[in-house]
Amino acid sequence: MSDTETCFGCRKSNDKIGVLLAQLGTPDAPTTKALRRYLAQFLSDRRVVEVNRVLWWFILNGIILRTRPARSAALYKRVWTKDGSPLLDITKRQAEGLRQLLIGRYAGVEVAFGMRYGNPSLESAVDELVGKGCTKILLFPMYPQYAAATTASTYDAVFPHLLKMRFVPTLSVAEPYYKHPGYIAAVAAGINKSLESTESQPERLILSYHGIPRAYVEKGDPYCCMCHETTAALKKLIKFPADKILHTYQSRFGKEPWIEPYTDETVKSLAEQGIKRLMIACPGFTADCLETIDEMGHEAFELFREHGGELITLVPCVNDDQLWLEGMAEIVEDELYSWLQTRKRQQRDTDRITCSWR
Image 1: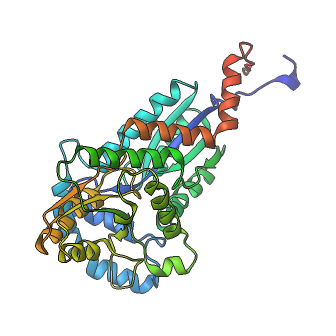
Image 2: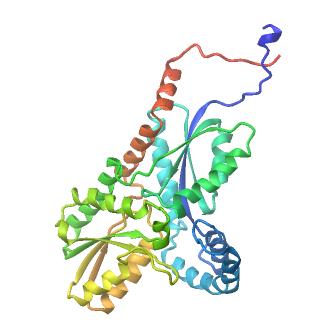
Image 3: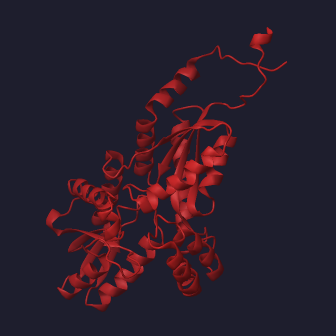
């Protein structure tokens, strides 16, 4: 090798493709201490709470973090399992299931997951992929519909971390898949399965999405439009009368108006109207968590029963259902078509070029 051909071994990467699943987050334990740490990180995010920062600092540290952690810890204890946080456990299984599908089709693909708040962090997941030789990364937010408080907040964590690196991986971001056939089919299949298996058929089906403040929509957030498009796509596949499918929003916080109709008020109203049986599905969530298991499966049921209702059947989220794993793989393949085709060509290339420093 001539002097002009000398390589100093600067490129040690294997040119792998990484897929980073980004989930919202979960506390490390159902304890007051762990919830205080988690809520401090979550509620300090400017994307989540868009108010005067000085005023909010005093409210958060002087009131909320003194009272809410204990109450939230009690709620998390109701959903915690032997495997820990349901959200964390399900996300692990989603990542492994997706990895198994992808490595069966393509060599040199890695999958990792991270949490925007809590552990493992998104930053640590990026480091994991880079450490495994990934020079191309697909950021896959686990939020079907875009919202600044979730999707954009994920970007806020990942982009700056990448830019601190000497060799910044090529980055692609999966677009919101709120009406992607793979996601819609998986959600609809789960609802239809619950409809077929329940002995007491519901009188109404509620599709409940996580709410956001109305002001965020007025500023340009497309979230509620995407939620309505998800509902419209699902109605075509759900085996239930379309006029008995209701679209609502849950989990509002604070006194300012959020997008409506509210799930809790809808549940109460239906009970007062004499409806006895409901089914609730949450198409804005890809994994069961506190907001689905407890807020819908426990609190909504108590509210419904308190006002005359009898039964709420909660449809599980898509979680690690095989149909959704296939849908995830389809989304990855759609997003990374050119990268994956290049990888296939490299697999067929038996004359790989290598270089070494001497």
